[in-house]
Image (cartoon, rainbow, N blue to C red; front, side, top):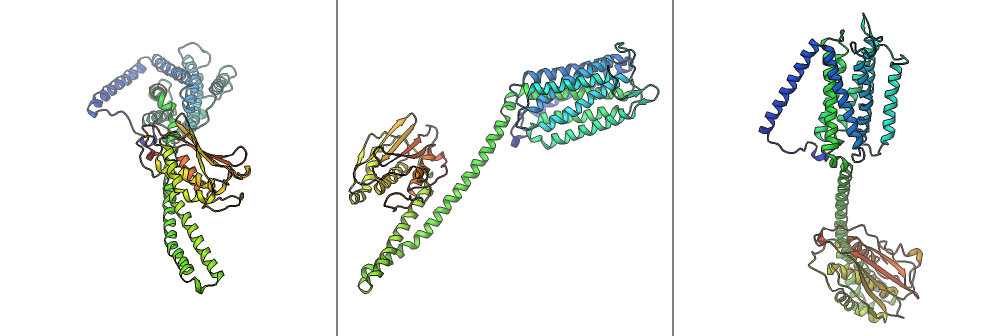
Length: 531
């Protein structure tokens, strides 16, 4: 039914209390006068009173069905649909109950027992339907409306057949002795079913807004009072019979008001209730994920810092012993000191890359597009020595301007070009280029080395993965993880393809942020690794 956020369960349009009081007392006065008028009418002409009250109840029941059935396509709620189809059959039973009353002369040979049987059959159907409706509250699977309508009409038709033509329904009133045991037991049993229904509604109240919850719960409780009233009367024209019918009319009107509130006054809240819950759950999950990411980043930063601190003296002592005291150390000892120095420097580079990885996402605000070609030139200058040692060159193709932070683009090209220098051979120049596709921008770094086996192309981005291909296995195994994390930060991706003629081409695609979405608001995705 209809529905507001759980965290604002009692949220309503604010109305001044001083404006509410006159309206409340005016409505209360009208209801009080109507109640007194019906009581006096029941004393003067009970048949007329009964006909008016019951026909009003029938009209309301049919209206409940009409509203619920005609709004079934956009109010996606099983509880509302269940009540709508049920009250059509309940209204039919109540209509026959009116016609069967003594003095209507529609069923002159059936006496007082017939209206009592029709009454109890309608109340059984009402109580069971309300219970099922409460159990369906919050269900995710949409029920078939036509199937529910068929079940309702079949059940109502079966009850009518048992009472009217077949006369197999138990007696409820015997002339001269009053109510039967079955009738009294049924009223108590129906009251128990209604009480269970009220408890279920209470347990699932988070699926209802406050107004609808109160309407339904009060309706159920008043129906219980109606049923208890019919356990006490001995005269079908007596006070308790009057109260039972009055309470029953009030309960049906409350269900009608709940349905109107649910399907007509708040259709959009009804339609998007489940979507709102899903979005709230997703937001909670994202907040938890961001908290975990922050903790992981802090952990990586702390560990990297704590491990990197002692590396400086270790490397320094090893170099000092090898270079300054080398004459007193044999060849094997100098080689071991060199190994210690190299391993220390490699570990320091790994720690530096891990620190870089943990910082991705903590980025500056964007002021406008940046010249990617200038960034690549800077990266090539920083790799000048590595280029000379590898005997390699880099050829720049077209590079579009892009709206990404310079620091992140520098990380992307530095890692991709460094990776190509380690594994790309020196037969042909490394190629760097890019192109724009709408708001997305693609960059590539192409080498002509040994390439990457197809089976390993999905693994090269795993953290610390350094590959089993090629002759060189240096590198920290973090570089491509940084590239992938940056790409995912901007709703993009990275992948590797075979270069025509041999080699590997690494692609990075990223989506430029909206003008009203600063890059600091983006959340980094999960990262994997690199070669």
